[in-house]
Image 1 (cartoon, one colour):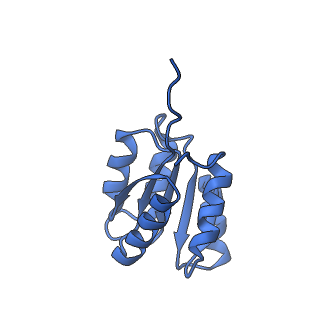
Image 2 (cartoon, rainbow, N blue to C red):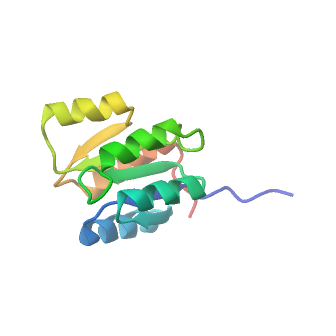
Image 3 (cartoon, rainbow, N blue to C red):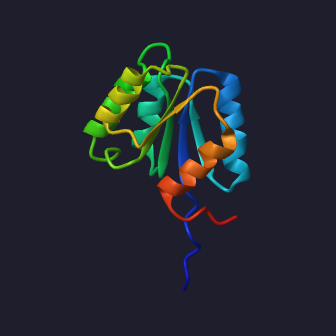
Length: 131
């Protein structure tokens, strides 16, 4: 018996509802299973509950910010190997360097091109999901 290929799962965490919805729609249309979070604490909970192939994470969120979320994800065995892409309005070189020191796979600045973000996601995950 052949098993159907698993759909790639993406966790998107951003406190901006418009960006969260835009990314959710774009990733869903490309065949990804999308789970969203609007706060850092929620992102940690979601990430630890299931298997994810990629996490797109806003840096500036109320409560626990993206820096702290990324740091905690990298400390946990369940989530340590999931590629994290920072999506941030912070464009300073030192912010990008801080992200790389935390082990994020990429640092994308806002405003961003959703198509480029999808291309980056496909490169990080591997084969595009089956529709």
